[in-house]
Length: 129
Length: 129
DNA sequence: TGATTATATTCGTTAAAATGCATCTATAAA
DNA sequence: TTTATAGATGCATTTTAACGAATATAATCA
Image (cartoon, rainbow over all chains, first blue to last red; front, side, top):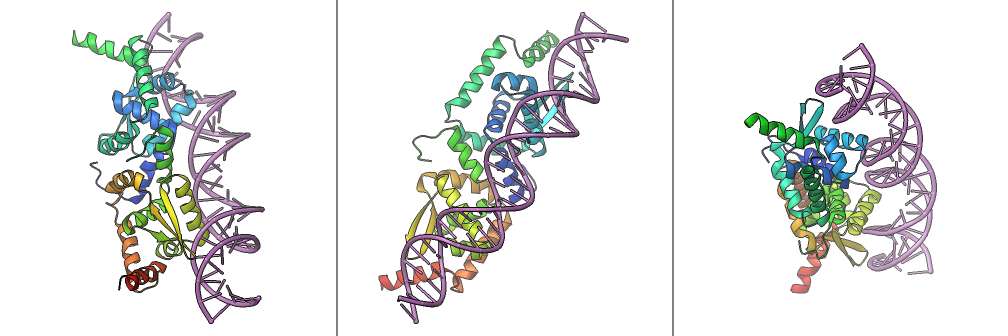
């Protein structure tokens, strides 16, 4: 954690963000896959668009994630300043298999090129060629 | 953490327990002072009786604390099986000074013999003598 | 036994959180 | 320019959480 002004309220805010199972699963995906857009998270976790978008905005307001816009997609990622905190949390939560299943689902969809990020990555390849 | 069956739901339950500032302060006191009764926690944190009792029952149901009855007092303590988890949490939260203030308040009241636990301890001394 | 003290619980209120449906906006593609 | 897609948001609903006041219970003490 490289946060300059850490206090009880902020810690409480972070922990509140992790008090919801949906958000735990979302942040886990972001943490393992670097960045993801709303529609891909929807697909992997089988959440509605509203639910997914709202949780990501919540996480952004809580100071846990960043976002960047690429064409019509908004890619979210875990903020660098809180990566220590997030890593600490998942050191414990990772013992659960359901989180692994989410990663498996992600991989399958990614390999089948059903995710928006697949296209982003192949675009990167063509830039590199 | 020496929990045999740790899973996402349990982790979520633990984190939910820490999503409330009052509970963060309560568990902090228990963690640092080994065990405390409701009335002492009330005094130190300036909480009402109802509020204090309910949060402790919440924490007990969540599997984070144990309780033992001594005369008319109920002493609560952090469960041994989750002490690793709790320690991890406070490794981050301890950066906040407000938690220190609570400990100071405890010490002052303790030294002034205004806490029920003071009497419990002096009873222990007399047993040892 | 009656009074006191510590804690739990019942009842009711208020606030916050989670979520869906429908809609709006922005961007890209046809 | 129309159409399609991604994402945000307004509105409404349901659930959950936090909390106080009053009361019940249990144990101690005079």
